[in-house]
Image 1 (cartoon, rainbow, N blue to C red):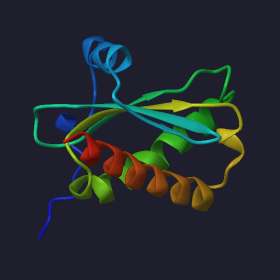
Image 2: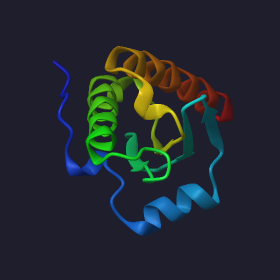
Image 3: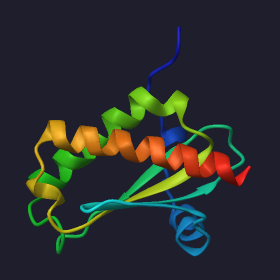
Amino acid sequence: MSDFRYPRQLRMLTGGDFKRVFDRAVVKVPEKHLLILARPNDLGHARIGFVMSKKNVRRAVQRNRIRRVIRESFRLHQHQLPALDMIILARKGLDELDNPDLHAMIIRCWSRAGKKARKLT
């Protein structure tokens, strides 16, 4: 049975991790309300990090809800994703989506990111 935990190894934690992705993102997945930037890593598994400014998602409750939904989706789909470091950038209007719409959108993004990453190899 697969391991569906979400340990620290699946998170981008340091500023250097984020800088590497921002400087050399080779996979970009744009959506109306968010943008995923990604680059391959040598770890053998995908990792995610979040950038959500107060300018784009005003309330902390909404920022936390969005992170929670995306983390849960990542946790369930982590084994289907290639070894990428991904940054989720929130855009205006993301807080207006309800949980099912947000979940459906992020699943589409995982699929598109995986396809783009496989084309690179």
